Length: 323
Ligand code: F6P
Image 1 (cartoon, rainbow, N blue to C red):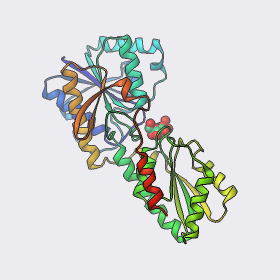
Image 2: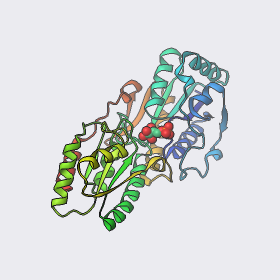
Image 3: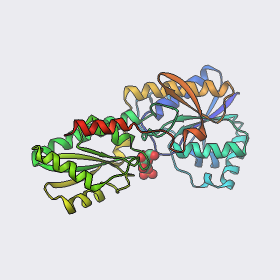
Image 4: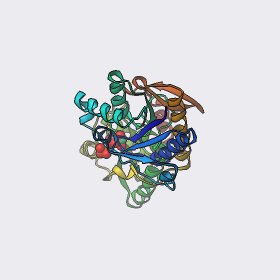
């Protein structure tokens, strides 16, 4: 293989730049040319390419976002769009592709690979941590630290005013951010999409806390919780339990930005390197990941489809520690 492409796709995540750097530098080490594809699958369809040399990725390791930009492509979901992408790949002489992204990115890659003969290797880059085949996705640790920093600050004002805060964190289908940030901030309750939320139980818990002299509280709500987002949950609680003055904070896209943590920089560097090595070894249609400190390859179709289980023992831990 003499020329490969690399792109970032879906929601950006801190560490994507560190990962692009690792991909480019590893390819250069093996005397392989690298084409950067701008704007994910849209750039692949339109041929929005840029040559990446070793110096092109200097001084980006510590920067949030992605120098290649990112997008969620509607056109790539169509057969016509994928056909166009195939012909731009071919005419640019690209022989293999590294896709950095999440669930949607690998769903697209899997579909493409079933129709066309271009090898793809995926790297898990999403703050959601919802991919099977890796303990952590690139960006998850940084996002967690961003949430923790924000919730600690909310805790200060919550306790000063005797208020109950409902804090919404990202995760439209997964509760990984909610669960870990909730434990790390000592939240009174954590609501995640993976388990059914019963508002009465939540109220019961808050009442218990109040009886034990709690004067304020934090409820972390994953945006995709079945009871609704933080505004909806707050409204439902308030209807039956009016003890606290309540406030809602939606942390939103602040969770996706910022300089990557040490953990994310190292993970991004390891996985960027491994992806190139595996592509050159002839691996196809797989995501690289690290499980128990071991590099593993997982077929795209297994990495996606919400196969990664949330550690519900941690939810039990909240029950014990938050009373
Ligand atoms: O996929 C990552 C994610 O951060 C989700 O947790 C969130 O629901 C979504 O992206 C938001 O995406 P957008 O940038 O399109 O608003």
